[in-house]
Every structure is written in structure tokens, then in C-alpha cells.
Image (cartoon, rainbow over all chains, first blue to last red; front, side):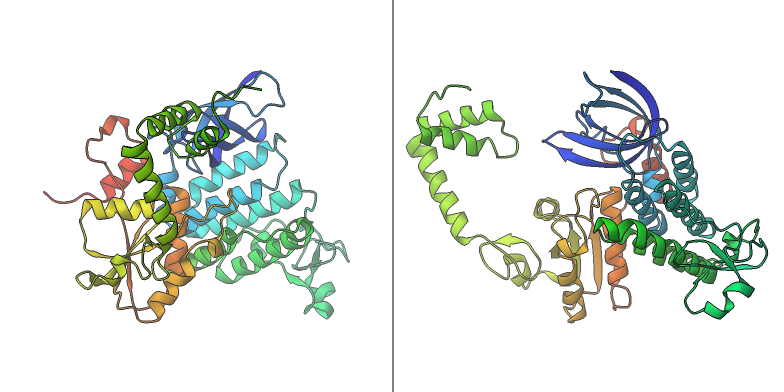
Length: 245
Length: 202
């Protein structure tokens, strides 16, 4: 068995003294693991940092085997990511999210989204907003997508202001007002057709929204904690946005 | 199954030596044979040294360093600069910095880095004692975070910075750039960018 694909490094775990098991989000084959011989060498360690784009060749005798990777760097962005807290927490938080997906299950749009976000993680104005959209895409791919396009009660696409915590569907201002204290807030930048960009307040509400559904549908049923990197990213993104409004 | 070529004691010695970093099953056999041949000159003193280390080595409750006393020799050394603490991932990093002898200060050993892939979170590291150490008025004015230049290392550095936010200390980190003996042609783009950003006047 042999194939070649482009991918983004999510992480690498030590294996023996000189090798690593690399976890790579590939374009056509999803999250895929493989052994990298000499992965702890001075040449390979900078390449196998999370966030770097690589070209991988995977070989194994049988498809079920772990297999070995031959890795060639294409875009090394890890050093740039390390410069800011938003970027370094962001790459770890997205890697943690992608680990929720089954191995070898293709998600090409998530791969594309990951690449775009990694290029913008150092820009506080767009990093938070893109991350929220990535979390929404993850929820969708895990089978718990939110419907933020029309009101669950009236069907209107105007003035969507809330999200029902039960159904995960948008609710208009008029229909949701009597239950406003029980509803989750829908930030304007996430509402259908909105061209408004996120400010600190709406971004915080968006993090609460995706965090609620990730906790309820993904983390709690699996008995796992929300990764620390997510709260690190949320704090860093809000702080960076406040410093550069 | 492979046949044993020696008694169980020797086989056990080989198995244990093979667990030491840098030694595989074959080199462990060579090492065991060497120890057996040099029983009085090497094996006996080594066994005594191992037993003494087992009985006396302890982890310093202040900084996480390993020593034969608690607090460790570094923490109790009055000649060291008490205004600076270097935060390192592991004891091997502390030893490397001591070899460099660039600064005569105190240390704090984290015991690793935050690693979601290996399931290592903040509670698994020596971060809380560091915050308590600084909060208690340890005399430190500068914290140098000397962790590896990896994404995991830098995530840990940012996490520590967040935890120390609001305390009266300056937090710095090691520079990133061209290593001595390094050739620009072989460096990755990120390191080159970091090196250019941190350029100095000649």
C-alpha cells in the first residue's frame, strides 16, 4: 500500500528513542497516523511541529497497519505561530477538536478551513471569528450541526437573535423574547447573511454558544473535559481583540 | 521463543539494562558482559552507587530539581541571584544551563510540557507550585521561561505567563534564531523570520 497526500501536522508522539508517531490531517484521507523514522532528529523535529503543512508519502504492507510516513515540508508556519498566544493556543485547540473525528475519515472542507485559519491565527480580528466557524463546522461533521438560518418557531430569516439550547436552532427576537433568560444569544455576525464582523462582546457570546453545544453533545457524552487549549484560546483572542479593536 | 544463554540473574540484568535510554537488547548484553568481567572495578562500585542514589535521591519541594537533599543545593546556595528564576521543562535542561554557566540564578523544573496528545494537562506539571512560590514573595523579579522552541513548549510558556499575570515579576523567554554552526540554507523559514526579527546592531 502506498499513497501520497498533502497534510497539516496536528501532533507527534515519541516512539522509541529516535522515531515519532505523527498525527497528520490529510486532505483526502482525514486524520491519519503514521510512524516517522528519525522523527526526533534535528532535521525532522522542526518539520513535525503542529500547524506545519507537509507532503506525506504513506507506506504499509496492509491498509490496517500503522504504516510509515515520509514527510516533506511545504509550509513551515510553526515558528510564526509560536509568537502569539492566540496562535499557539489556536493550533492546539483545533488539533484537539480534530482528534474527535474518527481516524482515516475524510473531511476535505475541514482540512481547507484549517489551512485558512492557520494563515490568519495571528490576526486577532479574524482569528476568533474563524475559530468559531471552525467549531460550528466540527459540530456539523460530528452530527450535531446548528441551524442558524431561520427561526425554529416562525420560519423567518429576519432578526434572528437567540439559539434554542434544546434544538440548536435559531429563534427570532419576537419569538424568543418570552424565554430570553433560557435562550443562548446568537451573535449578529453568525446570523444568516450577516456581513458584520465580530466585536469582543459578540465573539464572547459566540464562544459560549459553540462551547455549550460542544460540551453537551461531544465532550460530556464521551466523558472528557473541554481541552485547556480552548479556554486559553478564548481568553487570548478576546484579550487580543480588546487590545486591537 | 529464544533460548536463555545465561542464568536468570544475568538475564534480568540484561533486561533492566535494555530499559536504559541509549541501550537496546544487544548493547545491554555487551554492557552486562562488561560489568560481569569487571566485577570488582565496575560492577561493585556501580551497584553501591545505584543503591546510594536509590536511598538518598529526592525531588526538591521548592523547585522540582533532583538532589540528595531537600531543598536542593541550588535553592539553598546563598551566592545565587535570588531575583531571577529560570523555568525549565526537565532536570536535563537545568543541567544544560548550569553547564553553560551563563547565569548564576535559581531554577524551577516543570517536569514536562502541556501535551494534549499525551494527555498532559496543567495539573500534571509543576506550574501551581511556581505560582505559589512567586506569590509567596520568593524575591524573584524576573522569570525566564526557558522551554523548548516547540509548539507544546511555547503553549506551556504562554500558559505560565497567563498564570503569573498580575504578579510583580517580569516574564521573559529565550530568543529564537540561528544556532551556532547553523547554515542559513538549512534553516526553516520560521526560524529565519524569527532570527531576522530579533536582529541586533553590530
